[in-house]
Length: 201
Image (cartoon, rainbow, N blue to C red; front, side, top):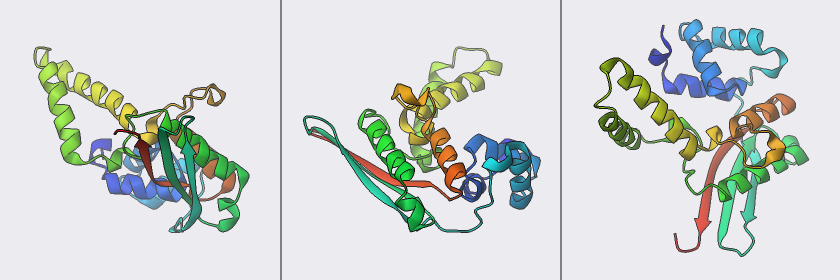
């Protein structure tokens, strides 16, 4: 089974059960021919203790954090969820939510938590622009060009794919930090939603 045949909902389900990254989940599902339980085993073998089967445990606890930029012209509200109130009150968990809120405040283009949240019509409209731009290129490279440009575009609008601006994170993405927190807490850490307010926008 090729990675293109893997359904986005299955990738999402596997991510929620393991805390692994999107591409790792996609590859594991392809290798497991779509079998989620086998994909979990593959991830555990490849990534060791970092991966746990969080099962169907719902992330029903969590925290809502706010960040207001100096001058009070930009503000962010973010909800990050987990499985227990013990972790919801954990200093690292709360700090993660605050760090991500600051990232959102500094990134006006970010609009969605994950690629799965980007509406199909928005994605298709963007792809169409890149297809038109690549129309004069040889047919065999057009698809790669469009795919590469779409990936770059996703990195500007999808929160999990953002590289953290703060240098203390050494260029890690929000997804990588979330995965580390999932591994450290053993809980399903989910960025549920966020909203960015800017005066005049």
